[in-house]
Image: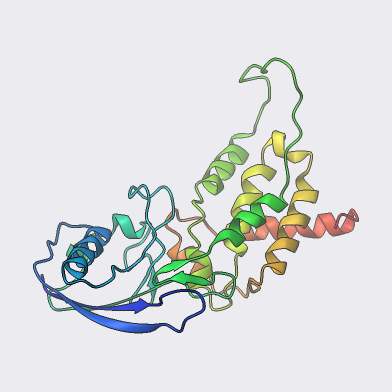
Length: 249
């Protein structure tokens, strides 16, 4: 395959960036998208040019590091996968691919395709801890959890914190991410003690970090690689109202 790659290049956070075109030949349709970028970087290094900086780690769709917008779609055109799971056979020979980083005020660009997503970590930190009894570990079946709650909690726990929901949202909202983290803990007995303090703290921190509000575009759920649904946002909003009624802030 031959491809024209139009890639966002930016030396650092203080410099202005721009799109730079690269021609890449002999790309295997069976290679992953990140392997294709590896091939490009090998060519650039051989020519004495600087490689394109991009985030990656596990390359198994687990870590959430591969944050790329490809032709306007976070993680590319295929549903329920990350960029590292995207293969070049989904593109046509001679196609032009526009590759850029997440675009959000809360995700400042560090270099090329790498953005600072530590705002998501700070939202999680604002949730605090859960209260647990010390001593010997309780029997696994000692705490009963209703099956629907367990399933919803595990579905929400699948969130890998990649930030695609923020990148896809016209408002750069982090409601899907925050809702997933709140739902994960709030539906389980272990997280129920601080349930309302947690939602108040995390939503307040989300707003302070500069993320936008949710206006129900649903783009976040459409691009989520773990297919987390909008119901986590509804649950978060419900808990937030209850927290306000209880005087929790």
